[in-house]
Length: 138
Image 1 (cartoon, helix red, strand yellow):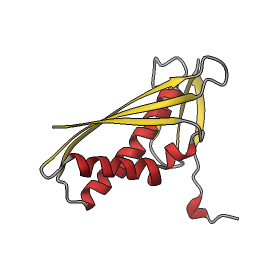
Image 2 (image 1 turned 30 degrees about the vertical axis):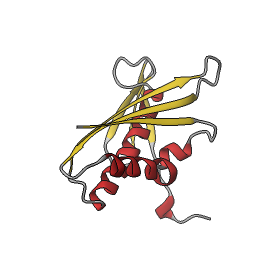
Image 3 (image 1 turned 120 degrees about the vertical axis):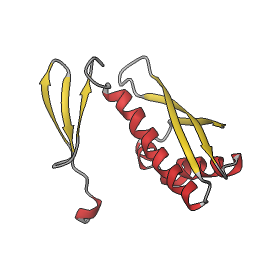
């Protein structure tokens, strides 16, 4: 039996069409739309969740490295299977970062640590998912 500190809860309410509103109880809500007209689709939201999870890891790690991070943009592209379930077979991230004491070795170390050890979202996906990344520093 797991303790409550390890539990997470979310709820969605259908509003109309393929549009749902939801989030954590007493937390912020988001709109998800299967047609992608009023909000991101669930599959795009999954890419955003993976990118945000990795981004939080990378920012935290680079802060501990005293890299002076001043900017970070993460783009995510996923390739889906043609047949059902149309899950992602691979995801590619592009990290664009800047910082006063940031170099490629620190940036790559932070991204690698996130991918290999810390990113809960990526590690929650199918184990055969191919994940790769590119890095640009400015």
